[in-house]
Length: 269
Length: 154
Image 1 (cartoon, each protein chain N blue to C red):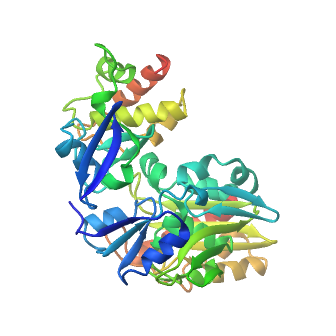
Image 2 (cartoon, each protein chain N blue to C red; image 1 turned 180 degrees about the vertical axis):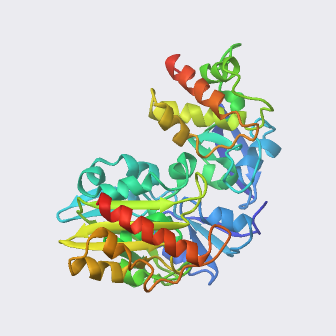
């Protein structure tokens, strides 16, 4: 399978990328390409211009930033898995990066690409939502910070403006965090994914593949805040969700999985 | 058309490519290196695995332009001299292939794994080869071959 023709621009800097994105309304950012290139080959995506930010090595870093950790958007999954700062201060991000795709995908795929692609079945966006991460975007008017809670606006849709580039992901230092996913086969997307993390003393829970975007399990969180144990809180897993029915599972099956995996995640937390 | 220059199996190679050209077709059709197979064409099966700057990647999911200036190793470039590379030798000795279609990808995925983790456990090997499919169901022998290659210091 060959993608439809497009114009290619290799960005020399973030500002150059922002400029190039202004060339055409169907221009799109290419990072590691491990979500976008399969979509191009299936011709689900047909951008007119691809702006390749993959060589902007200054967006590949993990920095201890006081009470938060700053992750450059182009950090590859394989780099996050091994990163000493993340493993010490927010291990759930490193452990989740190790569950993305397979080793070949992790060698190329980036955290920023995964977040900006906004697949509702994606692992890292679900974890970032539970962590209350901040997403830093740069556009023609400068930088702004978007809370993860308002970043994912629909399936494959985000709050990023057409000429904005995601440059950094900021996560709090969180000792206790878990991400579990159910897959039918090795390497599959999550039929259901559950993230749980203790952030500033409160337990946050979020789902992959239980709605058109990653979502917080508010009913579960509320039950926990009111003193419920793991099993009781997990009973609220399906509330407020809108799981899809597809080849990997029916909505009813997903609701069942959500219940089981929330309980397991809370027990492991 | 855009000119790309890359090092393939230690040699400087050059080609004019369309932006949508994929690395695997640059290697196979333009550079004549047919050892890298196209299996699923959807970045699932791993048959097209090559090393890009020393790390395993699926060349059906990399644009040729993304590989501009990089160092690529395909199955043709792995052995030096007359003998097989130790990973190839281990696959041969452990009967880790039947039809052989998936083998170049498995061998290169193994080389990448052993660079990152020289003595992997059996469980680690099975997870690390998650991105490669063998439809002759030869996984047990493939895992044995990776263990043998690790013991041989590949």
